[in-house]
Length: 215
Image (cartoon, one colour):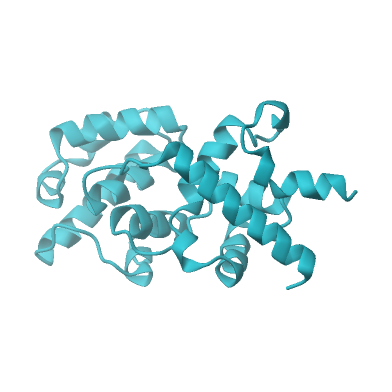
């Protein structure tokens, strides 16, 4: 790693700490890893407000594998509508619930490979379930993490999967869980597709400001 890269990383870690202090304590997504997993499935290709509302409706009726396994696809689909691909997601959620019940488990597996074996579970969903459901270090790369880390020259990647691998190489493990909620906050409020640097309260430790000065 070059001196410039080390400086950028140092600023970036300070930035994460600054944002974490602002939004800490980070509220758990839901009450259990199973709920986190189900929410993640619902949220795919669905706007956050719609996904949260859909998950809340479902969990008000059933929030454990045993309870969801007793529901029909029509029941679950109706509860999570209008989430994108709601019927397919209902089938996937019920299939996971039935599998866990058959194994006498009330929570999903604690390894990425096992989570990825479920239909509807990709790398982002698996990592978010591990990090926010089990507090197991995992880097969840969504659109905000991918865009911001590339914008700040921490990584130079084309896909979220490439970004995850690149971040694993440079990011201390104690930041793996933190990076997603902090950059989601930054991306939603200030570091959007069109940046709002003029009103961002975190400029002091922003690598982007250092990059701009050296252009």
